[in-house]
Image 1 (spheres, rainbow, N blue to C red):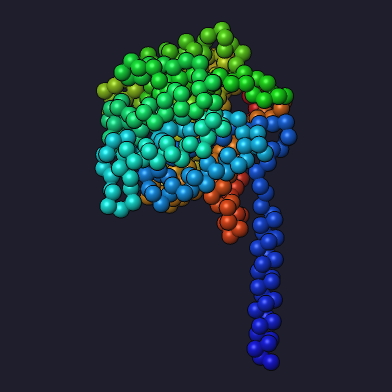
Image 2: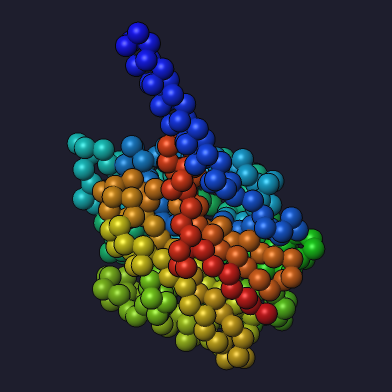
Length: 365
């Protein structure tokens, strides 16, 4: 009899736990457009932490697979990567005796993990300090162009309108401009200008020339670059990298003064770079400023690479920034979602960051 009662109690407890878990799971929303006529741009933060450690590759694969699977449901039209594609461009100080990959293997790994989008979704990448030199920005040498040539993804190639020169006078995707049309009913023309980490005065002049081209006068301009603002929304000044000191690299403050402020059509800047271990306030940032024409410019920093256990942790817990462009052609809804947490019922309740810095609405008219 005691055994029967014990079994009944255990069965009842199990039922209650399952019911509670189901109820909790049902409360967690799955990503969906708030307006069926909207479209989505996905911002992928610095991925160096996923790439450098073999153990973390699966998380980036989950992120990429989720984006691919939800392309239709969320009307995903563009992916933007904020730089630091790898942790070491050259061998630098790696630890192959533990789990870190040597530099060339990092490039091969990220190249393979990007293949899911080739011919399926256009993606635009910018270079970060870790994509240059050995450990971090000692010089302008990079393997980026070897693995991401202009003709790699035909959908991105169709958007490419021009390339600027890199440090060696070669035109490639380190500095480039892309054009695409938003789906109906939006229908706006978008211009994305990519700047390498710490661009030079000459490269900013090239970017300004592109922005000032009458062809793009009525486009919605976006600048994608690695370092621009901090978590508090203020501009990054010149940083202590050899690239900056010896190669004329400039910081976010100069990018704003020489390009963003004078341009009439640049309405948004997206960057990564700055973060702090398990500190969301220093890993995401947003601010609105006025350009020389008095128009609003949204400035967004999104770099979650250290929130999942610091710089030796998970690489960032799979967080993505989803930007829903509403059909009124002025409202953008920003949400922060982790398909890595969402994949399991036991962690699904952690899949959204809903505080004011991670879920918000802004207007650009």
